[in-house]
Amino acid sequence: MDEGTTIHWHGIRTPNAMDGVPFLTQDPIPVAGEFLYEFDALDAGTFWYHPHQRSSEQVGRGLYGPLIVEEADPIRVDRDLTWMLDDWRMTRDGQIAGDFGSRHDAMHGGRIGNSVTINGQMPERIAVRSGERIRLRLINTANARIFGLDFGALEPVVVALDGQPVTPHVPDSNIVVIGPAMRVDLVIDMTGKPGDAVTVIDTFYEGLEYRLVDLAYGPDRLRDAVPDWSMDLPPNPLAEPDIASAARHQIVFNGGMMGQMMMGSGMGSMMDQMREGNMWFINGEAATGHMMDPLLVLPQGTSHVFEMDNRTAWHHPIHFHGHSFRVIARNGQPTRYREWQDTVLMAPEERVEIAFAADNPGDWMFHCHILEHQAAGMMGVIRVEPGTTKN
Ligand code: C2O
Ligand code: CU
Image 1 (cartoon, protein in one colour):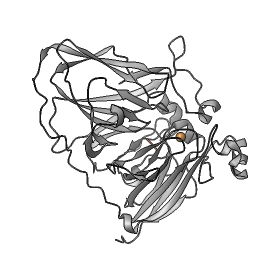
Image 2 (tube, helix red, strand yellow; image 1 turned 45 degrees about the vertical axis):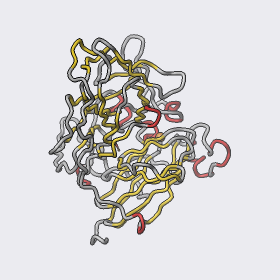
Image 3 (spheres, rainbow, N blue to C red; image 1 turned 180 degrees about the horizontal axis):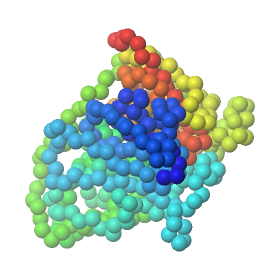
Image 4 (cartoon, rainbow, N blue to C red; image 1 turned 45 degrees about the horizontal axis):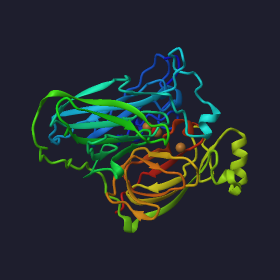
């Protein structure tokens, strides 16, 4: 490329110096330069990698890839498929529209495209076999689009979120919701008859539903009954937060069009920052780059709960580097599965509590993964201060 870049290993718990954040953990790799990333893969699961430098455009133009760490002892399936879902803003003559960094995108839901791809293509149909069990790894690599996939008569079972095993379950309303940067591993039994087809529909934005792809059954049948193989993935070695001793921290998200701030309850300093083009705030501060004073300083080895409050009219997939966290409550209600995630999708006005053990020392990004929101300020740093590990 004719500009510098870095690679961030999204969801992989690397040492801080390998995290690929420009200026914070390394200088951008210059044109014709090189940088050696080296780390142990501690967790098995579905991850991905992408630049963290001018990511709205670099990722938006397709610079990313899947990163699968295989389980030593995987669950049994007939096929293991990966779908990287992306959407692109294409012009009438088939080029990627060059309007990156638009202020309108930044203030609203980010850069939503007009063409959705699976692994960079737009397949009409994907062949399946009657009776087949598929593990489908979904990775949302879009800058901003949230997907809500409806698999019709099929019953997808969620077995992992953001690479981390979860109690196998059918998602609410049978819709698989996946925000930017998130991953969902599904186990799907192809229960239709030979020659049938099922249409996968993205239903997330009301009134804008579209057909993603058809799953088309071939003429033969692989087996008659649904297999009774276990869907339980082996757990990864994550440090369990101690909720009883955890320090609680309030984290408030503000900004954008039509939020509480726009409705008149905004603080003066945020209004001033908005005049300078920063549109999103974490605890009243808009980031203007990757270098900043930490929002919080946490001693290594201690447990923490973030009480996150989305005071905006928009969804935000909030990502924390270097750690996975448990999502323990939404709007005051305990979650059913206390799922481990590295990116949690917050609905407008939603309150979400996450818990984690601060076990990886360094300065870690904490940001919205709608890349235009991140670029317009929705980013902070959480410092895990090395020291003697306390219990
Ligand atoms: Cu997927 Cu801070 O990144
Ligand atoms: Cu956001």
